[in-house]
Image 1 (cartoon, one colour):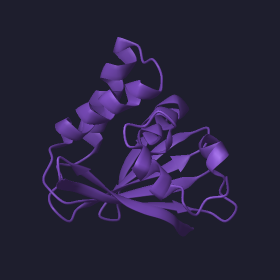
Image 2 (spheres, rainbow, N blue to C red; image 1 turned 135 degrees about the horizontal axis):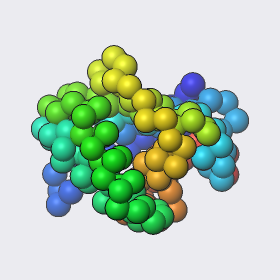
Image 3 (cartoon, one colour; image 1 turned 45 degrees about the vertical axis):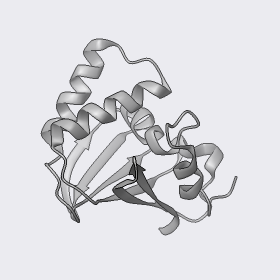
Image 4 (cartoon, rainbow, N blue to C red; image 1 turned 120 degrees about the vertical axis):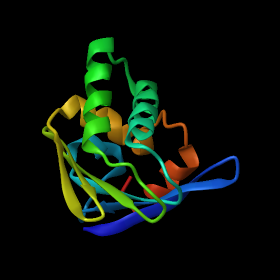
Length: 146
């Protein structure tokens, strides 16, 4: 895999995290859901796992409807799977097309969420057309084939 693009998320001028998109050769921006890739976030501040899970679900809802029971299950799974993070910590998500997502903390495996619908909506936070951060999306997809 190669670094296809990178960017920084800021909120009211405060750095939240840096993110790098790692993709295999031939990665196409127009077919994100059908390809493996890794999004690697390095945090610039502390966040609880519960806050990360809650914000993730809020952002995922921008990309498609999620019924209440499914949203609660996904948020709960994220909150138990992900650790609290501190400055310098990294969380990486591996997109496994048609299977789901695998997560890592500072290079160590955390576990999977084996649900393709979850993976599609989760990674759309950064790579979907309805992202709340279109400039960051463009930075991440800079080196991808259209």
